[in-house]
Picture (tube, rainbow, N blue to C red):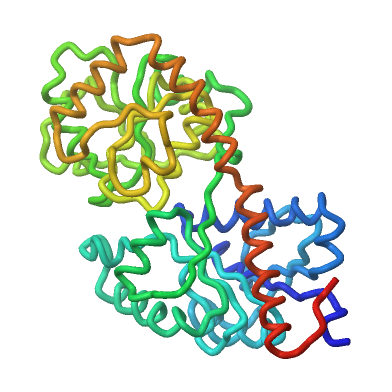
Length: 376
């Protein structure tokens, strides 16, 4: 019988050749969690044959159950539209980003957010045009659409005109758990344990770091410097004259260093105006770092009652939150206790389970519509 053989799943590994942002983090950690899921679940191993297709030059991953296949011809979008499409022609293809072969129907694409529509100035004209064109083509012909939060599902449906079901997954924190020599990281960046506030992000406008700069101007006598991982240029504050002794622009930090920075920070501050998920919040919680968070976009959905919130459009609201964080020692312990419930919900393992269910449910639905017997 046609469906007696395991379902062949091919994962799009193009992300391994790209600069790492939150999207590539999502891809790597979800893939690794899916591999671990196959190790744990014999029933799933019997139902699927999983492969990772990568372009030439992609760095290897320590996979145990997922077979890696290098497709040496072409690169970039041409690799995806031609080499990958041919290799996955009789398989179910999983893409961890919005992009995938436009000729393929049996595939899953992941739409992380609608930032390109909400904040178009953040992206080049060429990127916006390609992004919208691919989504326009793929939104109705693709078997499964997936995103990372209920907020993003609503945003994607609204801005891209999608009126079909979108699977809501999640993101995890396990990759950021602090390990190794903490003190070396603190010495490197000139920080003292428990005596700084951490922010994580780039210079993109939606990160809203200019509000942080404005708050620092008003915080006379504030005792904690703000360390920003991911930014090195003072333009991140967009003209705010920030006291030099209250800022540490750390630039790029490694995963190991980021875990150490979370573990020793007094607080994480997340001032974003727009986030599809808000990964730094759960990364911080996973390291016992309480969260000061903007009440905006997906952030309240992710943090629940485990954050101290402020209005990201009101500098006085952020100033008040920073002062309360510095003066209320009981609040830190209370939020860390509440964070445990959030960490139980948000994990890469949970996302791998949701992904597996979405793919298998789609396969069963196709088999049923084609008149195939159901797979046991």
